[in-house]
Image (cartoon, rainbow, N blue to C red):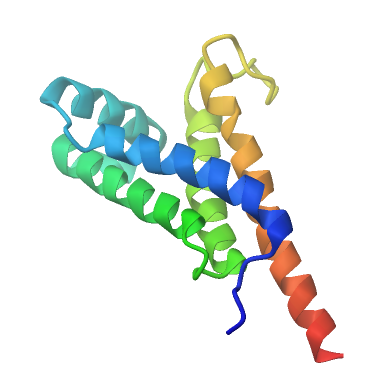
Length: 144
């Protein structure tokens, strides 16, 4: 049986997977105040989220992070699939960064001091895209 994970993907999958899984597990036992804070920031960037209850939003966010983290850690999930999930999720985080006032310098994507914690999510986009590109290139190479 062929394992859908290459050795060169393991360091990034393990580190990012553990980080995302931990983030999701940390949000599981959410209190109202924390849920409202997370929800408020997300709804400020993505107005359609205002319709979602803050606790429900935070539980769904937690479940999504747990699922994504587990997919990255599980060697049976193809790297291209895990990378697509990571790219989508981290793309949303980068959108949050770009749409939240005060996170980056006016007229520039450069982060402010307050925005550094969100700006680092751009690395996750790069890792996810690298996984997807590698999976596509590998698939094209096998067809020749």
